[in-house]
Amino acid sequence: MAITIGLTTWTEHPSLLGGTKKLTLSEYAGFFPVVEVDTAFYAIPKPLVVHNWRLQVPASFQFIVKANGIITKHERVTEFDLPATVNAFRAAFQELHDHGQLQAVLLQFPPFFTVSRENILYLRQLRDLFGDWPLTVEWRNNTWYKPALVKESMLLLQELHMSLTIADEPATQGNSVPFYPAVTDQQQAFFRLHGRNLAGWQNPGAGWRRKRTLYRYNDQELHEIAAAVQKVAAQAQTTTIIFNNNAGGDAADNALMLQKILGLSFTDLNPRQLGFDI
Image (cartoon, rainbow, N blue to C red; front, side):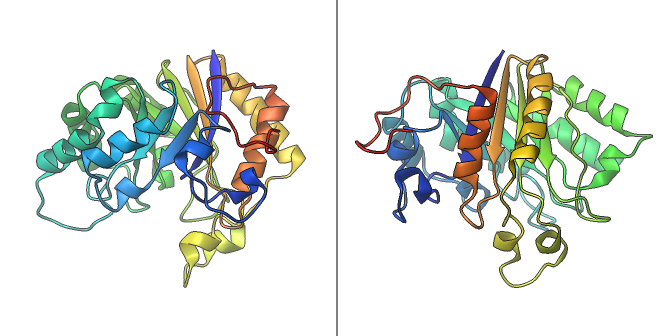
């Protein structure tokens, strides 16, 4: 049983260095053993870019890579070559996979990705196209969690060897999913913490994507999350918590607080700059 903690991106956490400077990946890897990379959602990087990432981190450092938006149907295009797109994505991150540093590909589906025969078949197709690559699914439509269907939803992920991304986000009527700490892959489990900014989550508009994660977890909330993490970690070989509540720069501080609550010590990190050891 292992528990790791990380953040989305590595540049946007200046509090780790006590200032306003954007972090390099090398600096980030002095604090946490895993990072979520979201840039691939917008554009698939060149393999050389990924190679340069590897040069900046320890050999045990892990990457969670968010799947390109075409793959997860965020782009409402009716005609595209899915196998070719997945192949291009895999080619970009093949080096991470080959060196055991690709913890998972995050398949975050849009709110309109509902329970349907078509979408279930689509998940099966993605598993076939990705082969043995580790996949974790974050649903953003609560039909997958309806009482009459949730058991089947979890069994589907088990069958496909996909882990459920356990999301923590504001509880709304239409565009959120419940906190559902289930293990569907005994190899690894994932928590993705977006914060609980209800007003920001419910009111799309200018800057919405940034404002909705404007939230700082308090001590009681982090202890409640820690309890859920420990229960899940007893069922999976590796459990990873990613903090995505960073619109106000709170993710790093919350991650360090949760690390302390769980009593975790991360080894094999990059050396830190003098004067910034915690």
